Structures are given as C-alpha cells and as structure tokens.
Image 1 (cartoon, rainbow over the protein chains, first blue to last red):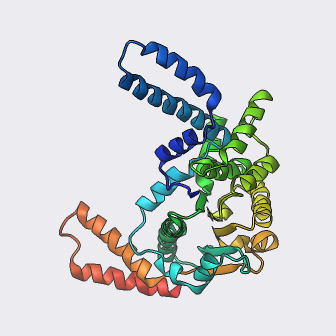
Image 2 (cartoon, one colour):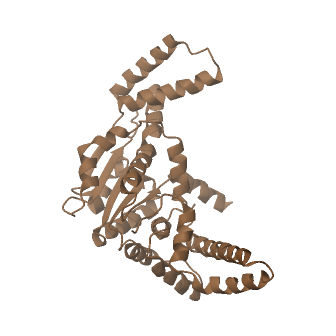
Image 3 (tube, rainbow over the protein chains, first blue to last red):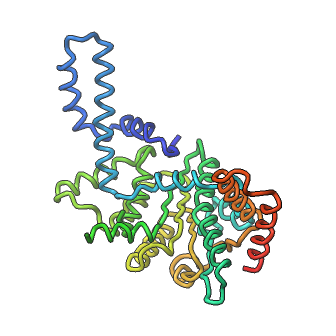
Length: 182
Length: 165
C-alpha cells in the first residue's frame, strides 16, 4: 500500500529508511557507532545502531526538504485548523459541485474545483458593513480550505491517494520582503 | 518565507516526498545532481517535472491551493501556468483552488474554464457560529457584562446586515 502520512514526520523517516534512500551516509555513521559501542552488550549496539540510522536519515531528509522549499505548509495548516470553529464551512462539502469533483475518479469530470469568495468592499459600504465583511472573510477563506484538506485526508486514509496543499499568504510574503530589505 | 512559484511547487514536492513509497529515488537523484553542480535549488520547469514524476505512482492526488490571488503578482502567472502543466500532465490530480473573484478571468484563461465552481457566500450558520464565539470570548474577559438580551440584539443586528451583503 502506497499512502502518504497525515503530518506524521516520524513515519516518513521510517519510510525513507525502509527504502534505502540514504545508503552512503548511513553506512559511514553505522561503522563509527558500532566501533564506539564495541564494549557494550549486543542489545545496546543494536539500539544505538538503529537510532544513529534514524538521526542521520532525518538530517539528510531535512536537508532535502529545505533544498526543495523553505515553505512550511503543514505548520500553516495546523495553525488554520486550530482556529477553525466546528461546523464552519461544512455546507461546501454538501454541495453537488464538491461531491462531483471529489468523487470522480475515471477522468471524465473536470479535474478542477474553484471556490471563490470575499467580494471586494466598494466605496458605498458603510463602516460596520466593512467590519462585518472583514470578519466574515477572516472566518471563511482559509478555514474552508483547511476543512476540505482535513475531509479529504480522512476520506483517503489507507488508500493509494494523497492530499497535498499550499496556503498562499500575501501578507507573510510582504513581511518577509521587508525584513530582507533591512 | 519566499513564496516564489518554484518554492511553492517545491512545497508540493516536499509533501509528496514525505512517506510515499518508491518515489524518493527521483528526489534524491535530483538533490545529488544539484549538489554536484554547486547545490543550487531546482528551476521551476524542473521542479514541476519532478512533482509530476513523484506523484506518478499515486492513484489519486488531491492538490489544494488556498488563496491563489495572494500569490505576489510577479509570480502568480508562473504559478498558475505550473499548475496548468501539472493538471495536463498528471491525470491523477484533482485540483482544489480558492481565490477572490477579481482574478477569475485569469483563472479561467489558464486553468478553470469549465471547472466546477462554488461561490463562497456569507452562510448564516457560519456567521452565527462566529459571532457566538466572539461574544463568548468577550464574556470571558468581562464576565457578566454581556446579558442574554444584549447578545440576542447583537446577533440579530449582525445577521440582518449580513443578509444585505
């Protein structure tokens, strides 16, 4: 079975070790460790050996992750879902567009679902409407994405399917640019 | 947090790399080749290619991108084109996007023509849940100040205004 974990980095490391991805570096460290523990009993050697493999694989796994991207979408997802209120946005999951998009597996349906919202605030809006709209936007936008992500994760668990995601954040990008310019 | 198109597609590869079986070899190979050539990151076309390769053995991949309109303007087109390429080359991908309506034309031109779409409206139930939470939070700060009458008044007024939006 070929399944992505749901944010459990521990199992990812295990999976990397099972597939022998990092043989070169682990071989080197394994030799050192066994020599260092040569006076200990066999159980300790074995345990230290396994820990060292895991630590080394984790190091290289982190290096590769950093090389691929500095973004941390899992962290952002955790943050958004922690702020999500129970029940918010669930109506989206019951819409027939969502069900058709989500359930189509034979390639006959359009592969894309777009959820759009958060109308721009026109000048005619008076202040309290702006405030309410702003709160509503805060309430729904990324919460719906996080809800969809969690729902799909639950649905796909144990199958050869994956849920991969990104949160785009203009403000975070601007803050970072400002820090870099200083 | 540099949200360039290549970093965003890299973020997708990163997630696909964590835990799927039989795919790590491709990423490791690309990483080793890059190290030999000075350790620079991949360029966007190579990152897209790598993503498509990496997910090749997965039956179905749900790819969810929140707030595409918030990608910085100079990277947005590149990013949308990268997503377009992924959808075209990987029939196992289902793409979920959220964004504001003002970039709908841009979406449609590149990606979402004929796509399913849902208008995220101000749902009454969602607003009620949100307002209740906010009033509970206020009540926690100054217990007893928020009477039930005041609570109902606020709720009614806000829902009425919301229905006019």
